[in-house]
Amino acid sequence: MISHNVLNRFSGAVQFTACIDCAEDTAPGVKLGLSVKWALTNGAKLAGADLADADLTGANLARADLAGANLARADLTGAYLADAYLADAYLADANLARAYLAGAYLADANLARAYLADAYLADANLARANLAGANLADANLADADLTDAYLAGAYLARANLTGAYLARANLAGADLARAYLADAYLADAYLAGAYLARANLAGANLAGADLADADLTDAYLAGAYLARANLTGANLTRANLAGADLADADLTGANLTGANLADANLADANLAGANLARADLTGANPPHG
Image (cartoon, rainbow, N blue to C red):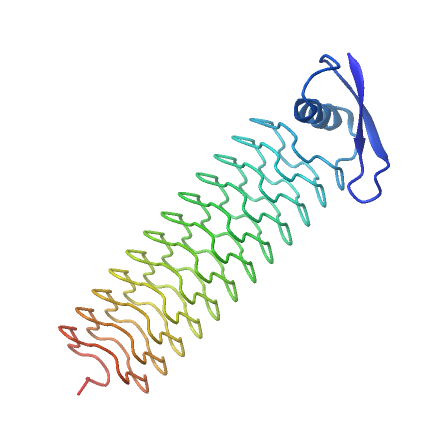
């Protein structure tokens, strides 16, 4: 058994001293991981702790208070963080592959470039979180709160965002290929240049969203609400917009080749320069032409 000091992220002072079972020459990350487990067992404070590079692979951190903690580059692969409190935590470049974060509170957390492939984040609160460049491939974010989140350049291929709340989220240049966004709330979201090929956005609310130059090839947008959306220059080739509401939407220069716009609401939509070759406008309001 050895003693190991864990410092405060902000002051640099010793926050607690853990008694852990390992050799003195054990890797620092392993020592930190063992110290976290000791803290959870012994009631030591983890909020604000400097846990950078900690090895927490498979750790049980359910309901742990890690608010403001520094977990940069920490290995949390397969960790169990259900209902954990991580407000303002710093998780840049952390590995959270297959981590379980259901109901976790990550508001204002920094997860830039974090690896969250296959992570479970259903019902998690990620409001205002920084997820720039994060890898969320195949992650489950169903019903998650991503209000005002920053996801520019994030990789969300095949992610499940069913019912997620993404109001005003910044997804510029994000990769959402084959992502599932049915019934998601994306009002006023910024998706300029995003890649949404074959994404499912059925019934999604994209009112006022900026999708300029976004790639929505083969995307499924049946029944989606796109009133006042900016779709200038967007690629909607073969997109399914049946029954979608595009009132007042700006589709200037958009590519709608082969798109399905049957029964869509195009009232006051701007279609100047749009390519509607082979598009289906049956029952659209008003009909094109």
